[in-house]
Length: 120
Picture 1 (cartoon, rainbow, N blue to C red):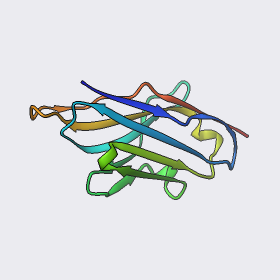
Picture 2: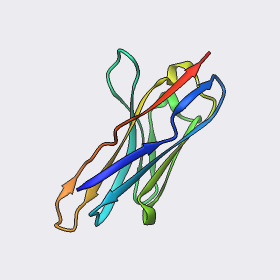
Picture 3: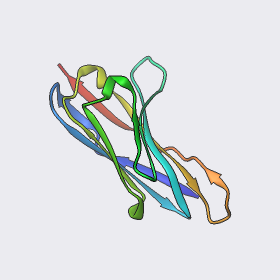
Picture 4: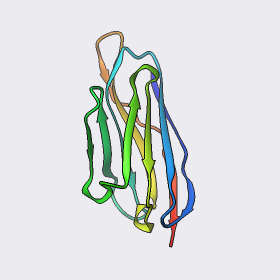
C-alpha cells in the first residue's frame, strides 16, 4: 500500500505565506505525478497544482504567481509554497500521487487533507 501524509496547514492572515508538504510512503517503484486539489467550504473539490517527475508543473489560473509546487523524487516528497494568501484560498488541501508499484500496477492514493484558513 502507498500512503500520503500532508502537513503544514494552519490559520494565517491575508498576505501571509504557508508551506504545505506531502510525503509518500509504502511500496513504491516510482511516482510520475504529484499534486494538490483543494475544497473550499460548500464547494466542489478543484484542481490546484501538479508536478510531473520530470519537473514540469501546472497550476489553476487563480493561484499562478502565488503558489509554487516542487518535488524531491528521491524522497517522494512534494512541497507547495503558498505566498500572498487570500481569503479565497481558504480550503482543505488534498495531495495525490500517481504511483507505480513494484508489481507494475498503477495506484493513485490521496492524503487525508490539511486545512488552510486565511483571514481578511
